[in-house]
Image: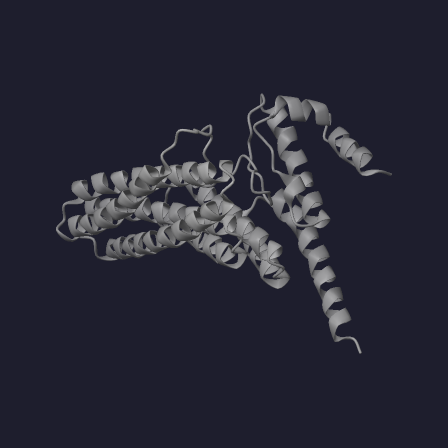
Length: 327
């Protein structure tokens, strides 16, 4: 029985043909073919089939996210936005580099100002500054994509890689600062003087932590572009930690269940990206450990789907170790 027949059979069991799902649900593409090995590909495709089928039944509107996924998958509950800008041959790369540098400076400076605003109880000012920081975080990542794309289009991959290497470090630095800031604000909730102040601290801390998580995503993406897969995996795990914390915070504060679930799905997606980079780096044990961690943040069907992969990959890893230790 060939692979194509199996895929057709599975779609048929779900009551929809592959052609219909592909044509009617273009919003879903988990980029399964780019995954590290066939076991991952099969697990990804099984989940993709299920969520595409649900999408078709839901008037062609996705109801779920990709679980294990390739780098170009959609939809994903990630904060980063990949650029869709067309290449501009007239782009002044030196001017763009200067603009990016100024944005990093603005993010650092404004983070300090936002912290000062909280300490002086000028909470409205701090929120305005945080919104500006958030905008700058998005803009700097967009410009970095434009710059590195320009280098690549001009066949200067060395410059593109050097730029991503620098921006990976710079972004990781401000993400760490935002995480510390957000954690410090959250700690103030316990000693808040009123329910209003408690709400203020909740809003400010979650806003700041979300930006930190997005920064770690950007940094993890940038490390991946330089093929620093170990650093990328670790950074994506830091992003996942932020999402885990946000899920806990939302539960503690009695937030809408949808907010909690989104944070959990985001944690899982970030862990899957970390697992991908560990796998590419041939750190199988780390990859499987991160995948196992992700399970509790997934829906029931995705958890079962992942179980099979974890079992298969663990068996393969044990077999490989047996070969190495056998005398």
